[in-house]
Each structure stands twice: as C-alpha cells, then as structure tokens.
Image (cartoon, rainbow, N blue to C red; front, side):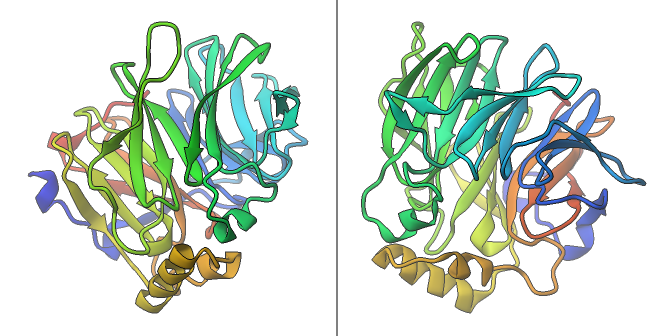
Length: 320
C-alpha cells in the first residue's frame, strides 16, 4: 500500500492509557510509552492502569525527549524553562535565559545524543498566545551543548516554532512553523551551526491547517499532527503531502484561518477547533512503537488518554 492510499477512519483509532493530564507530547522507547503530564513532569503510560509520574515542579510540561542515560529533557511551556529529569525523578533547570533575556515560550526539547539539545521556542512572549496577535515572527531555536553550559541561538525569525526533530541520518534539523502552516528544515553543519532554512513539502499544509508535532517513520516519511483540523498528515520522501485522517470543524477552521491571517487570534479560536464527538481531539504529537514498530501513539491536549492506530507493514517504523 502506498501512502497516498493509506487512510484512517474513526473506527481505526483506539484509546491507550487513562488518567493522563495534558499529554501534549508522547515518546516511545524500549522501556515503554511516555507522555508529558501537567502534574509537573512526564509519565509512563500503561494500557490498563494509572500512569506513573516521574519528575516534579515543571509548569505545563510540553515537548520532551529522552537522552541515552535515561534522563528526560523537558520544555516547561508555562514557566519558560528547560528542565532535566533524572532517571530517578530528580528535576532541575538546565536553561532559563539566553543572552541575558528570558527564553520565552519554550516548546520542545530534542535530545541529540548525550551532550546536545535542540530547544524550540515558540515566541519570546510568555505566555505564547499574544504571538497570535503579532506580525513579528520571533520564534527561534537554541542549541545547547553539555549540561546547558553552552547555549546559542542558531535559527531565528520562525513563525511560532513547535516541535523540532533531527532526521534519521543526522543531517538535518526539521521544525514546525505552526502559524506558517509549514514544515521546514536546516542542514546541520559539522560545527553544530545550522545552514539556511529549507521548505519541506508544500509551502502550506492548507488554509487554517496548523501543524504541531512531527516524527519520522523507518522509510523517512514525515508524519504531522495538525491540531486545528484534528488531523494527521504525512509528507513522503518526494515532498508530497497526504491527509491520512481529518475530523475538521469547517467553521472553526475557517475562523482560525481568518484570525491567523489578520493576526487577531485567541486561544478560544484554537479550542473551538476541538472535535466534538470524534476520537482525535487537538492532536499535538506522534511516535511509533509497539512490538513490531507499527503502532502509532498520538498525544493531545484535548484528551486524558493517548490515541493509537496501526500502519501497514510496508510503512512500519521501528521502536527507538
């Protein structure tokens, strides 16, 4: 089956876990399924029982990833700080300012090996919502080396930066520009600097289509959660975009599109896009896992559980 032919229906989407608190980001590894948790850290998600929370004290834990030593690096969206959660749960701040200024609305922390972290910042505003009403594109990306001792802005002028991920071959850093309605990437140079921004796939995923999270499958295709349309898209290796699932509220999407174009948006515009009855509500992140790597786990700010679906064997992605 080709990606162009692969479609999901509501019946293909199943809940996973329970009792989650704002599971905005999801991560899957050999130790299990993890999600960010509004109680102050991340949690291990179980199919049949309550989650186990690890870490504490983070305001609105958002995008996170795991380092080779088992620690987590977590963006605190509500307090504008980057945190490290040790395997035993001890939590400390890695970064809270750069060039003498507060970071702003940090979104996603991408661990790149044992010593490097790529940190996306939606906007220098905190909270982030005023960026909806500003024509100034002030999202940026920070590279941290070591334990946060060396931090440098390596990309700037992004339109509400969301998740960032390193390509499987390590050559590019991919980034979501949510208000730009697009995915971009930057070549990673040998010294850790980023090259010029390049477009990935179409120049726009569609009017009112606000992407949030991204992940790669084993074949190098890029999967995208589109929060405003309760949707999942995939951009194949040729750069062609395909809609795999969508449960869009047409009126709400049109309203948020107008607001984004006029820079008059509010949080209410986004919340109005939530599916009323469908199983996928405001999806924000996606990761592959399961015994054969063919189960997708989707995080959301609109649910208290994750959503899962299966992909065909020809599209399978291995567990990290």
